[in-house]
Image 1 (cartoon, helix red, strand yellow):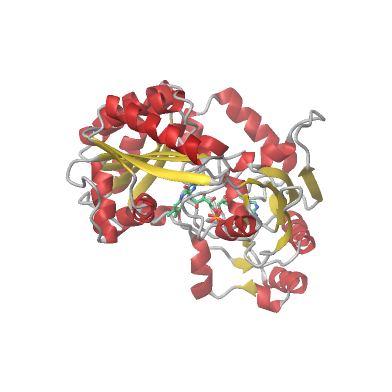
Image 2 (cartoon, helix red, strand yellow):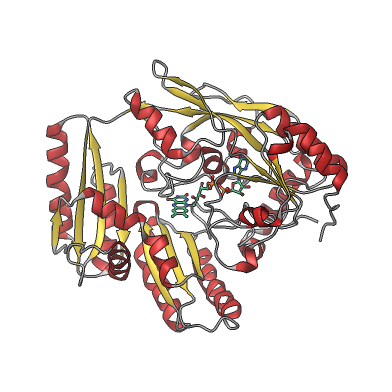
Length: 467
Ligand SMILES: Cc1cc2nc3c(=O)[nH]c(=O)nc-3n(C[C@H](O)[C@H](O)[C@H](O)COP(=O)(O)OP(=O)(O)OC[C@H]3O[C@@H](n4cnc5c(N)ncnc54)[C@H](O)[C@@H]3O)c2cc1C
């Protein structure tokens, strides 16, 4: 384990000189907020020694240089909505909160791009694009709260990734402060480039371990004029999941293709205190399509109805969109209300194995007498399995969840899947990352980390450990 120096009063004074007195906190009552993200299990909470709120990239660079000189770890933090404990400072030290770098610098409607600081909320990015008739296509369910910098750092996905891809597909360029305190812009307003390594894509999804994102240039696209949601209700998991690939193959080009099993439907209905269609027996596929014309929309509606009916759907409806999407988005909070301690897993498998994966994860949970609830970005093969502590005694939970995760990840990797489709490894899955990643690939990642961050000061203990 790497040894770091503690933050001393001399460092605090220096940090205050960099960002101003009001932008440094050391009061333990206030630090506690920055010791965790949305992972509720206290094993993944770690207290920072100080939190700083830089307002400019130059301040970020100065903080990083100080941290290198003094061997103090720095953990970048967005809104703290992460589900992998990536923003929890594993080794203490400095939490570098980007919340005050929250300006939309430019919305260029003519050339369809937007330049933002990292602390802008995703919802505000989406609204600023919509205000000029354009779409920012990144859409994580946490969009009301999370920051764009966090989305880029985790390569966030969400409900529209099946059509538009994940956050890495929405970004032209990122300005970063490197782990040694230099400032550079990676990428550009370019639609293609084969001019050396694609460094901007290396940063996206690196979870704050290879650079602090201080600015981003985002792609905007024309807002599709027509849009409709459909709710196909199936009597069982099997028929619902079997229909996913048929919809993908049919040329419908869905914007969303989401799955909720019957238990998830009921959990979300209970949480929201609403009744949902066929709540007693329905397994849902939520399908959204966007088109240029009404005729095209009608055409796609007819195709969806045909495919879902042939696939065994009890009904295909045009639902109350607000209620259905509220239910889908409530899944995390609804589980948390029923079992504060739970393990939100985010496995991704080849879509062709989705049905098999559903069967196996149900079997694994049953075998361990655990409650596992499932929703999925089905079109992406990305399954959100929440394993509830429920009645499992607190002292048995760590061993129990380890046994379940061992079986779960062994299965997932055996069919060509990975442990996270969008939430990331954070510090929560480091042990599993070491256990299941191809050793050649792990070595390559560790070599990159060591080359860019020789003192290992940037978010150590996240994604993997390095000697
Ligand atoms: C209810 C709920 C729904 C969610 N739905 C989705 C979903 O649909 N899709 C999805 O992908 N995720 C989802 N998430 C997870 C989470 O919202 C995303 O991972 C999000 O991208 C995190 O953004 P954040 O600003 O909160 O980042 P944080 O949690 O603060 O940080 C996440 C990681 O990014 C790093 N980081 C943050 N900002 C920067 C920066 N400027 N520079 C460098 N590194 C940085 C941190 O060090 C950390 O490793 C959901 C979470 C919740 C609670």
